[in-house]
Picture 1 (cartoon, rainbow, N blue to C red):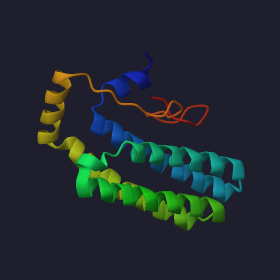
Picture 2 (cartoon, one colour):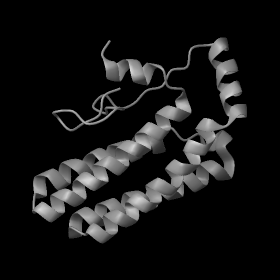
Picture 3 (cartoon, rainbow, N blue to C red):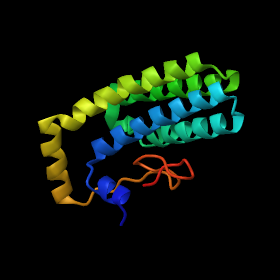
Amino acid sequence: MNYQQQAVAGMNPVELVVALYDGMVRFLYRAIRAIEAGDVHERRVAIKMTLDILMHLQSRLRMDIGGTSAKALSESYAATFALCIEGSRLASVGRLKEAIACVQDVREAWHIVAEDREVLRFLAAEQSKQPVRVTTPAHVRVMGEGPTSSWRA
């Protein structure tokens, strides 16, 4: 097990979600740098990675138990998805910065939840009952970017 895998293994599910948001921000900034450099291929790769994370997060929403919070997250993901697509299509740094702002707003909320003592106690209790299985897309790296510029779980 390498350092990245060990770091991920030590995270609770909420911290993993925060890490995914951090990854989206990194990929969006990478897309902005690609636009500024005129690198269409790199822009598309960075946007694809962002969209992969968004789709993964969207697919994990539990609308049946999440209520209005899940609905709000779903709408946020859809808006961010649209900004990413439009930003990439138009090579618009402005649209991608809007997407970054959306991601950072929701990321901050998750970060607050990750530090909440009640949430941490609940997660500890749940983990003692049964192992928590967190899955991410196979090509997604949770910690940093590697030579293939994708994420690892």
